[in-house]
Length: 588
Image 1 (tube, rainbow, N blue to C red):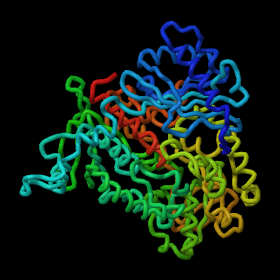
Image 2: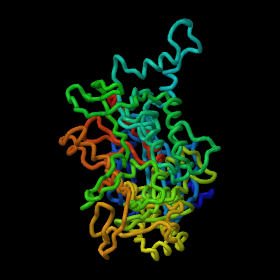
Image 3: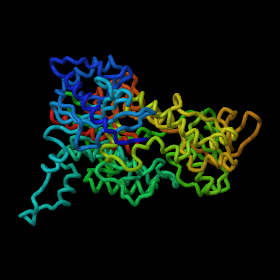
Image 4: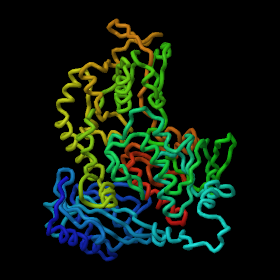
């Protein structure tokens, strides 16, 4: 990413804004269509409506945007003087003038990102390539106002009364009250949602079946680290220390999540199972059933339930014909923990995603005779520099984290695809020796839809790629075996029978077969009617060009979803929290 100061950037942006504000006026003389390129896009993140949606094409934008702006009372679009100034920057292979905006609405303050292609910046008027509008704060209920409202006196006159710890312990019990929000799932998705809600003064309780906060990371396979660098993975309000390693080990993340919950005063019940809920439309609340740590049950009545069970939370156990004949051990990757016990024993790992490769490498490191079973073509990229190219906005000097996050949320899907295709081409160039070696070893490769790489695979299916940290070289050298699933005839009591007649012995089969999407649990926990009403969760929704039902109001009142990467949860938890707060205030 190339970014430079540009003397004409501010003037070009100001010229566009003058025309844009005029086009939104009641007696507009400037038609909005002339302010957008034919390939222009408008992405709205609850800034001018209560959804997250992208509108593409000049005519479609011109038809939708003015009505939305009028309905929300949006006005006063201007360059934000408190944020990164307009600059010339490369985006998706195009040199653009990029500016951070602010505006006012009937419910609060908005923030935006405007991009003009450099070639269009000197037009009369300039034309926008992309515009993003987002809700930045609710009037009278911004985070600082809410913080000051909670501020206690400098000292208590009654020194015999409850202190901070007493109040915290009582609050987290919810003895005679219910939370406004029940958050199901206590990983980084649930914690970031709770932190953002807490900053707005919304009472939220996180529940999770795990025994200790962070166990969703702590109990995973021994050698696990995050596969993208620390710079993009900070949690809201409390960034990682500058002394931390680039790639964070799983136990370090686990302990940080536990610390984060305490530091952010997040109400959290461990060893608690969410058994399901029914919505009481007349009362505007849920009847949510919980099984507590002591085995007792409780029904809570939150007005909102946020499902934060991860985009990859439920193990996918596919039907593999004749596998039931195998007399050895079969375990899903989510339950794999002890590689050392398989020294000198034959192990087969089904799958070629990141977990499969990491587990195979860990088994190899402990002396197991391990073979990977490839079921479908897989994207492989070196963990660095190639896999990190897509997070380039977070590296190096430049804007604040808040500005980087705003910029990162501003890319419409078509522009994101354009950018990712270029980055994937670069990654393939950098990784050419590795990829050639894998193909020679018989590994089947692919590069994502239209060559757009791993990030969009994650957003569409939650996996299907491997960040190479050494297992690919083991495959190339033959130290980790490779067979194709379609070459297996059947399974036997002692292993596998191959179509070429070979009989392969096995002691363990690890099914690194991925996870079911977040919509899998909706029918189970809320019933078929709610599941049908909500529809798809995660993966791209074609009409809106957005992740389906994520961080926004769903068609089921009071039901919300959050999940994804650390950076996605950090960026979007605040928009989710503002929507819940707005609902609590009766807005919209």
